[in-house]
Image (cartoon, rainbow, N blue to C red; front, top):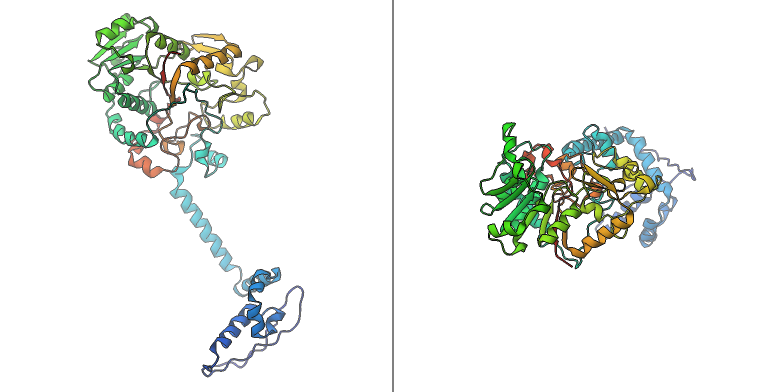
Amino acid sequence: MRKGPQSPTLFFTRSETTKLEPLPQMPLSPPSQKNPPKMLERVHSSRRYASHPDAENDDSDVAADDSKTKKHLPISFFTTRITNYLTRNGPVWPCLLLLVFVLFLIFSLIYNSRRFVCVSPYDPASRIGFFGFDGLESDFGSLGVPWCRPKHGKTVDWTSKDLIKALEVFVPIYETRPIKNNMYGMGFDHSFGLWFIAQWLKPDLMIESGAFKGHSTWVLRQAMPDKPIVSLSPRHPEKYLKKGPAYVDANCTYFAGKDFVDFGSVDWEKVLKKHGITDLSRVLIFFDDHQNELKRIKQALKAGFHHMVFEDNYDTGTGDHYSLRQICDQSYIRGGGHSCFKDSDEARIRSKRKHFWEKAVDIEELCGPGEAWWGVRGYVRDNFNHSHKLIPYEAHFQNSRFVESILDVYWELPPVAGPSLTHQTRYDPARAPPPIVEDGRYGLFQRLGLTRFDTSVFNGYTQMVYIQISKQ
C-alpha cells in the first residue's frame, strides 16, 4: 500500500529554528539524457547540505565553493549528524561496537600473554601495569651499562647473527648435559657464552679456575673435543659424585683437592711446556672462582696470558668479589657513576625496580657511609666475601685507569632472551645489554628450542664478560 506524500521534515540546530523548504520531487519517469550530470550533482548536493541554509543555493554555487565548504564545516554540522544518527538508531550500535572492542582486547591479551615481561613471580599484573605493554626493549640498559673502555677501541668480531646461529647448535648440546640441576652453578646463558667464545677462539689449551661439579669443564669439552684442559679447584669434582651428578674429564689435568694450587701460584711456564704450548695467545682462561678480578687480571698479565672470561661479573653494589663491571663503573664512562641523593630520579627508579627484580639494588643498598657507592658500599670484596676492605674513590678510579691501559677487548655476554620469554626474575634488565632474542620474538625463541627448558635455567645471568689484554 503506497502512502501519500510526506509532510516536510523540520530540522533544528542550536542557532536556527527556520523551516526548510522541501526538496523538489524527482520525476518517476526516466530522466532526460540531455543533462544527467546536473541531476546527480543536485542529488549529491541535497544529501550533503540539506540541513544548512545554503542548501537553497543553486548547483553552480555549490560546485564552485565545494572545496571551501569541506575545509570549513561548522561544528554544528557534525553534532547534528551524530544527534540525528543516535535519535534514529538509539544507543544499541555504540554498545555493540564497544562490546566487540572489549572482546577483541581480551583475545589480544590472551594471545600475546607470553610477550609480557615477567617482573615478579608473585604479581604478574602489577608488573605489566608498571612496565606497560610496549617499550620492553628500551627497558634494557635504562639505568646504564658501564662497559670498560679498550685502549684502542677494538671490539669483538662476532655479531648478533652469529650468536643466533650458534644458539641453534648449542640448544641440543645443552640438552645432553650430565648435570641437569646445576644449582649454584652456571645456567643456560653463561653456559652458552662460554661454549660460544671457546668455539670461536679455538684455543690450543683451556684453563679453568673454579670447577665446582664440573659443568664448566663439560661445556669447554663440547666446544673443543680434542684440546687439553687444566682445572684448578679446591675440591675435586669427583667428590660430588657421591651425592649426585658430576663431570670428570679424562683429558683434563686437575689441580684439585689435595693437589690444589691457586691460579696465582701455579708455575705456568712448566705447565705450558708440558702441554707443548709456546704461543700464549692460543690459551683461554675461564675464571669462576669468586676472587678479586683485578687481582686475577694482574696475575694473568704477569704470566703472559691474553684471553680470559669472568663468569660472575657482578654489578655495582652486588656480589662477593670486586668485578670488572664494578671497576669500570665510573662517572666519566657512559652509563657509569651514581648519586646517593635519595630524591634523585635514579633513586626513585631503583626503589620501584627493587620490588620486581631480585638482584635490583636501591639507593639504600648501593650507598654506604660517606656516600660511597663504588664496589659494594665502598668495599672491595674478595674470596667469596671472606675478605673485604674499604677502598677510597681515588684508588677505585685509578683501578679503572689501569684496566683501560691494558685492555684490548671488552665484551659482556647479553642475556640469551628477554624476561618475557624466559620468565627470569633475577637480574635487572635496566643494568644489562639488550638480549640476543628480544622480548616479543616468541617465534624465534620457540624455533631455537628454548621453550623446551625449564625457566630456572635462565635465572643465573651475572654479566659474564670476555676480555683480551696486553701489556702497556
